[in-house]
Amino acid sequence: MTDDYRILNKAKWDERAPAHAASPDYAVARFLADPEYLSEVVRFDLPLLGDIRGLRGVHLQCHIGTDTISLARLGARMTGLDFSSASLAQARLLAEKTSTPAEFVESDVYDAVSVLGTAQFDLVFTGIGALCWIPSIDRWARTVANLLRPGGRLFLREGHPMLSAMDETHTDRPTVGYPYFEMPEPMVFSSGTTYVETETEFTQIMAHEWNHGLGDVVTALLDHGLTITGLVEHRSVPWEALPGQMRRDANGEWRLTEHPERLPLTYTVQARRELAGGE
Image (cartoon, rainbow, N blue to C red; front, side, top):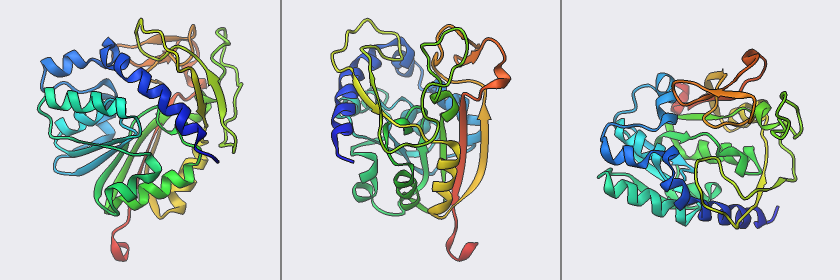
């Protein structure tokens, strides 16, 4: 695997970061106006996330930092990590304007341990829409395990791989059109749009993505010594993943209009690095 995917994907995220920060969907204005405001993503996570006050946390693939800052507002000492310098510029600006003591570090997710150190964190948080940009879930799981202190935990909510296998161009019914399992070669997409409201016209349109089956994710975490402490599949997703087939609920999440029981849309996995001696 060459680094071509990183170059293409980084260019895409660098171009979109200012538009995302300016979009009402990321609610930057609400962060500035209300010191207790939390992102919709983190508000959804709260019942499973629980009390994180005092924990040292790292948010991998943090983008413009709205979820990172939300976690800091819940009392964690947060570091956000992303490979997009433009995204981090927006994150640092938001942290400065909101007086949030969060640190932001530029790095590819696979290099996180060499940049941040081994066994430094009580919490590794990965927000939704992150894993599709990395080719190897096993390598990601190894990174997570090495970042966690003994007793530390992973919190991951992600788009469900069954949803990611759907071809969104079929607007009449869910139709499988892409791999469910992780494949060596990427899925190559070309699109000048993005997932938030914006009038910006983009020129960086190529992207390489991978799907990772639920079994792939769980097995990778187990293989690197983590204990699975929770697995929940959800019937909602934060964006309109299947246009023409979804409705938005009161919490800003999107659900299937018909037969929501037939397709999981997101999932949450929690895992723990055991204490020394298996305590």
